[in-house]
Image (cartoon, rainbow over all chains, first blue to last red; front, side, top):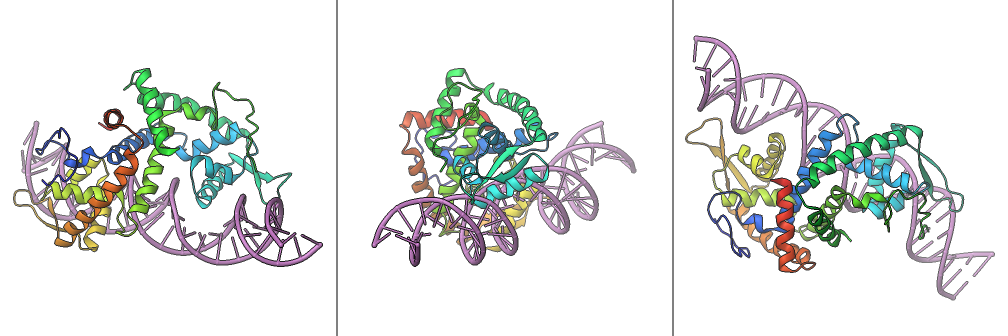
Length: 154
Length: 154
DNA sequence: GCCGCATTGTATGCAAGGCAAACATTATTT
DNA sequence: AAATAATGTTTGCCTTGCATACAATGCGGC
């Protein structure tokens, strides 16, 4: 039972739950992420879309003609990772690549009709998914949570 | 460079960088998780340990003789996933499997000397990692964040 | 204008995680 | 005794993340 951590007001110095590890913020972020990920997967099992894929579809819809590199920057993903995601989305006929008028290195990305329909369906699922999440919080707490999380990733 | 984005038909009112997607709690959790994951990987590149692996080492240290199924329940992982992680840790000589005295289906897990040393080193890194994280928050905010996250994964 | 450097897309390969499905063994319940 | 549950195990597939390398293009300093 070594607890070499800032066990301030240490709950569960006994074997109740998890050891000192539950004083670690990163630990809770990981668990929360896992829970969200799992529920997301269930909610989207019909559509067969992942969080990342929906995020990318959403982003392309909001910014038609966006380039892969921009997506990587906004969603904090490696270029190679973006590549893989776009490839999958393209293979499913959700996005199309096209040339960029002013920079021949770039590819402009746009949603196809199917991609747009997929996003519409996805948004409905996201509403449900978000509801599941937000049920735990008051509106004020939700705002606070977003604000705190934003400080981590910005 | 797409510095100024077209920001075309924004469905939501206050989109600064990202479209309406940044009203989504799950989106921020994912980004925050990614940021934490990345910093963790950097911090632990010397040790060559991942978040999961450290969590598991920590848990075994806190609960010697714990079984894989228990780890799965506590850390919310699939049995097969726990299996893979334990296999890696065992291959590196950090944990040993043994028989359980009262249930022959179970395997008791214990840290080896090397595993314990690894955990000691890992804890130092975690302190640094947590500091990086907590620097963004007041103690009160940190407590609040943990409390909110706990509601998600509990 | 030219050269070096940065940017972008692309391909390849590898590690880690998540999960489903199957199977054998052992406990527990009925 | 039989059905059911729990546990460990293997196998296989998918997604993500990242490193590396390469070619084409754009840009800034000279």
